[in-house]
Length: 165
Image (cartoon, rainbow, N blue to C red):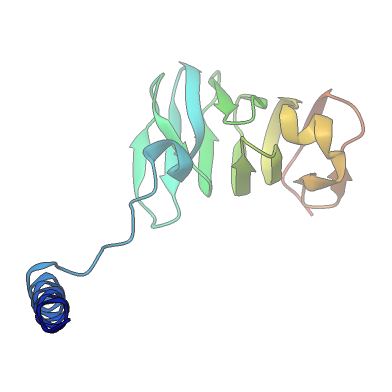
């Protein structure tokens, strides 16, 4: 019995020592980084002419096919220019010439197919072919213009605005 207590005491001491060393040697766990695909709303599929992407931070860059699009970006097209964008839920947006379109909100969970999309067309024209969000929950997709907010009921439509209130 005395041997058993000595062994038990030794194991307890060894366990406490190992736990203390683990606490000293192990740095605190960092939060896992979000995958890149989760940070971007989609990508630019094609560009014709002069197309600019403006980030929420105010930086501007010339758009090119394959560029990532964040969940809050502005697309600005020049005269005789256009851009096609594909979002993660397979929504396709074609932004026409002399247009300004804000992607104001985009979130999508590919596992549950839950998400939301809010687009503001400030000037010009846009064609939208809805993806999974619009097909599974049409109320979660909205398009704003200067004079109206559109709730979608179809899967393919065109919106045009002159940019004047």
